[in-house]
Length: 197
Image (cartoon, rainbow, N blue to C red):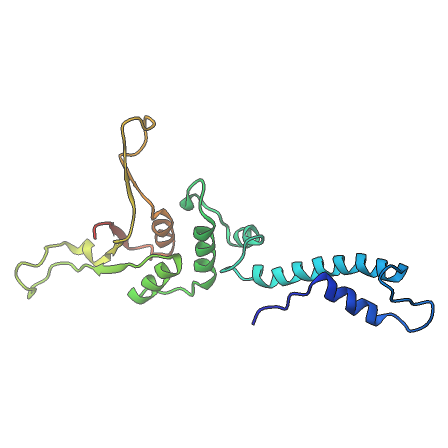
């Protein structure tokens, strides 16, 4: 249910109805009381509109004016979002950090990435051991601590002729996902990103 939106005329009528009755309390449209009430009604309408906007702006999923307040309380923006992140990216990062309950399961990381706006899958690895099926990838003991995030819906940008000297040969648009998952991954694990679809 959205908050009611009242017009200046509705506030004017309400304020006139609140005035006392009597001969000196004229309700004529050109009378002094009506002119004063018209000024007050505009002020009340502006205040009510701002209060209604606050109901929308108080929630991180719909915030606009209070986005910087949310970011300040969460240590954002950080370099992960780049130099000029979109409002949608900034909101998603705020929501992801606020709703993060912690965990270390595949379902937790998939849900966390979904909060940021990405659909991912996770591949786990295991060291080779006796009894494994022949033809499976061979890996040492360190593979017990590695896991791979598969991100198919990314945009990869390649270096073009005329780009600034020293620019990367290619870049991806999922730096927020990369940084946030690096931040929450278990410290003893190795995180690998797979950007092929």
